[in-house]
Amino acid sequence: MKGIAYGVGVGPGDPEYMTLKAIRLIRENDVIALPGKEPKETVAYKIAAAVVPELADKELVPIYMPMVKDRELIDQEHRRSAKLVESYLDQGKNVVYLTLGDSTVYCTFSYIQHYLEADGYTVELISGIPSFCAAAARLNVPLCEWDEPLHILPAVHKLDAELKEPGNYVLMKSASQMKAVKDILRRSGRKVGMVENCSMETEKVYRSVDEIPDDAGYFSLIIAKE
Amino acid sequence: MKGIAYGVGVGPGDPEYMTLKAIRLIRENDVIALPGKEPKETVAYKIAAAVVPELADKELVPIYMPMVKDRELIDQEHRRSAKLVESYLDQGKNVVYLTLGDSTVYCTFSYIQHYLEADGYTVELISGIPSFCAAAARLNVPLCEWDEPLHILPAVHKLDAELKEPGNYVLMKSASQMKAVKDILRRSGRKVGMVENCSMETEKVYRSVDEIPDDAGYFSLIIAKE
Image (cartoon, rainbow over all chains, first blue to last red; front, side, top):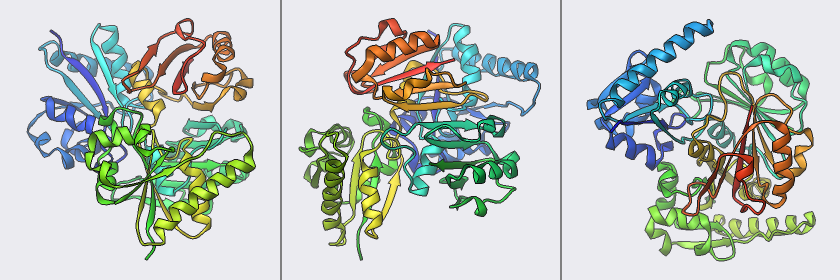
């Protein structure tokens, strides 16, 4: 019997945002995969270990995916990571891959998942609190009400539309081009809030475009409402 | 000292999808508001009570918001519900409002929140797993990868655009016009999955448009991918 690969979201940062399901899966399984070169240095590890300290004594598998632009190189790395996970599944061991936020939203596990499924392994995804929900909660603003659509966009190059669709926008991973994003936000006339490192100890909250620094960090999440 | 009103998401249905934060807030507070005429009959109550059985002995406040179309009548009901919550806050008691899914996504608490804030009370939102994340996890499909935008749309009348934006779509609350929605989905050529009553005991999973029944239930969640 081959093991199952679980993609498990541990939420945005605050260990209290972990679900009972994530906690149980970590407790019940011995092999835990973490997105990074040094498992114990990853954010996902720190979140989970705060609730499940015995995580420190489990078999921690580093899933290292370098940030490169060459799609072919990336694919090679994902293939290699999938093979590493499969080496445990072949021994009949389950692998619990821990990921920040939710396991279906811009999640590194998705890339591995496709290879695992193509190779005939069983994958199960377990939801975590997505960072954009936590950011909205932190700002105390509903993401969507009544009949408002909600658009979740990654990075600046998708902002050509200048946020002209009806409804509200979540902008993720905008940090690298924050100055351009701020211009677009200003022109949109929308009500803007941003949370950096939401629910982590280093969290910062911004309640207007003008408050947002040009050099905001990677985990910056913008909500722009009609 | 006035109490604080907490809007707390309990997740999509499976009690294991509750967060430690939701559990703590329910345990620590005596007044729990629930969206319905009979608190113990609400879905949110059943989810929470499965994990925190002492909920049964707390002061359970019914927040009844009838499904009517007249916006003025709705506003009156929301005003009345806010006043009811405020009557507890004025006594210095916190009120924990439990809601299905997440507290920022099409959440009935949002309506009350606006009144509470206008009246000068403190509101705090606590995230829960949104139903669309749980549905994607159940279907084992990532909601968005790489640079894919994600569009979350409520109900059929927003489908004029025929799902023509790049990226993936989540369609919520489509049950009442499922036949029309199915036609749009077919024309879109997208890969479609649906989960009815996601993570509840009555859950049903559909993996193509043709499998989806015209009379699907209220808690039906459609994911349409490029």
